[in-house]
Length: 86
Image 1 (tube, helix red, strand yellow):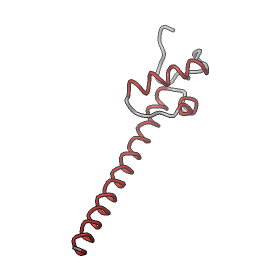
Image 2 (image 1 turned 120 degrees about the vertical axis):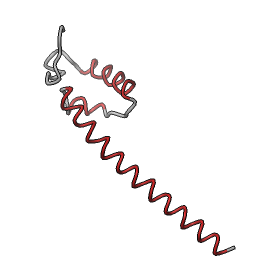
Image 3 (image 1 turned 135 degrees about the horizontal axis):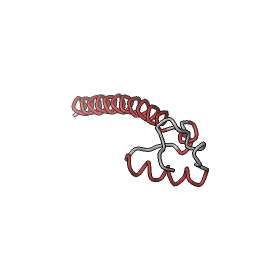
Image 4 (image 1 turned 120 degrees about the horizontal axis):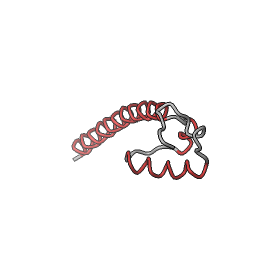
């Protein structure tokens, strides 16, 4: 292919199940972010996949921040409890 646009469907331009596995491996290596193989089927254009990954990353980042904050609060509570017992 000479040129593939961001709105071209991967499967319409010749992509297939074996190639999607190769694309998946290269993509996860390049962006250093987990991507579900099924996402390449659900979002077969570059534009739709990028939008999905942005949304997923933003949501995951917020969730991870909340999880870390909760873990810090729990650790502080345990330290306070140990201090009271000593």
